[in-house]
Length: 220
Image (tube, rainbow, N blue to C red):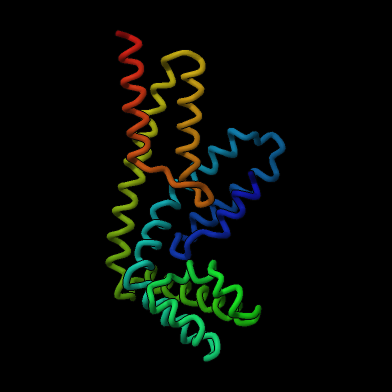
C-alpha cells in the first residue's frame, strides 16, 4: 500500500501546489516509520491526500487535452531531433495525445531507447513550462485553468457529500448490508487517489438510490 502511495506521489500533476505534495511526502514518511499504522490509517491518509489532489489533476488533464495540449505537442516536437520528429509528428497531428503516443506500438517499435528518451524528456520539459506559466498566471491558459480548477473542486465536494450520505446507510440493515455499504464507501473514497479509478458522482448517487429503495421495501 505504501508503494502505491509512493507511485501516486510521483505521478502528481505538475500544477499541484507544492505544499500538498510536501504534505503527501511527509505523510508517506510517517506511515513508513510507524509500525502501528494499519490498513485503516493508511487508507484514510490516501483519501485525505487524494481528495485534495483530484481537482488539480482533472483541471490539468482537461486543459492539456484542449488548446494547451497543442502547445505542449509543439514544444515536444521542437525538443526532439529531426529523425524523431518525422516519426511522431504525423501521429500528433492526427489527434493522438502525448500520453497515448508514449503508450503506443509506434513509440516502442519505431524509436530506439535514446529517441524515446528525447520524447519523454520533451514531455517533462513541456509539462514543467506549462505548469510554471499557469502557477505564475503568465499563460494565456491561466484563466481557463482557474475556471476548471473551480469546477473540479465543486465536483469533488459534491462527490464527498454524496459519499457521506451513502455512509449513513451503514447504520441500518443487517451485518452483510452494513459491510457492503462500508466497502462501497471505502472504494469510492480511495478512488480520489491518482492510482485508483475515480469516483463518479452518478455512481455514488445510484448507490444511494438503491439503498434508499432497499430499506424502504424492507420497512414496508
